[in-house]
Image 1 (tube, one colour):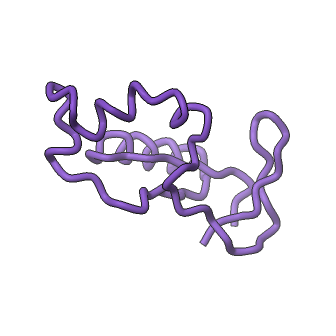
Image 2 (tube, rainbow, N blue to C red):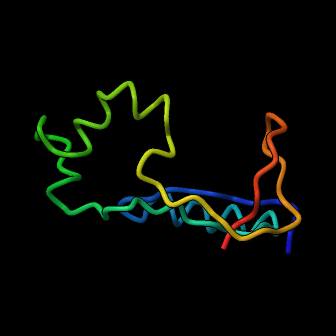
Length: 92
């Protein structure tokens, strides 16, 4: 297990491709953050102000609580240190 972790969220796959390339280049472990309820194509329609992604972009609570609705890794491991020094518990 690497001491470097690339954690990412990718609703459409674009960020996932970039995160994979970054993890490969850095020799890092890769972890995909997945929402509890997967996004549909209608959810991702940014042209519709009532779509899930549009509503979430305007939701201050979602930005202040980025793990709301996200499955948090639970497997115990050596842990990772984030940029701000917070220790993460690992990932499954």
